[in-house]
Length: 91
Image 1: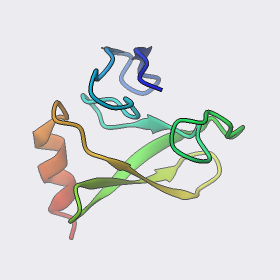
Image 2: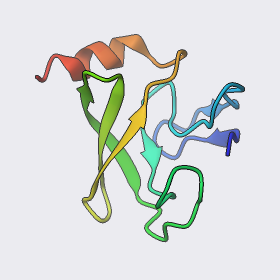
Image 3: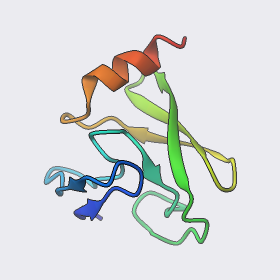
Image 4: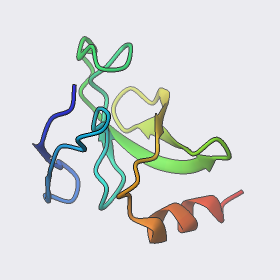
């Protein structure tokens, strides 16, 4: 699902991505733990997914602040590159 939303972490309004499903905030990179499988919105956790690292395959690695499970999302072309660079320096 490609949806607009208000980021629960940085409180900025996030527009649809318009080329694939928007699954995280491009400003702070946070996401929300709402899917079991991409786009299904069936996960009942609804915790914030904190970005903790970058995978070499252009994926952001997250850790849920509520249930502590790890999760990955593909980077979007409008993501905050300064934050991507900072996360990638942790390797």
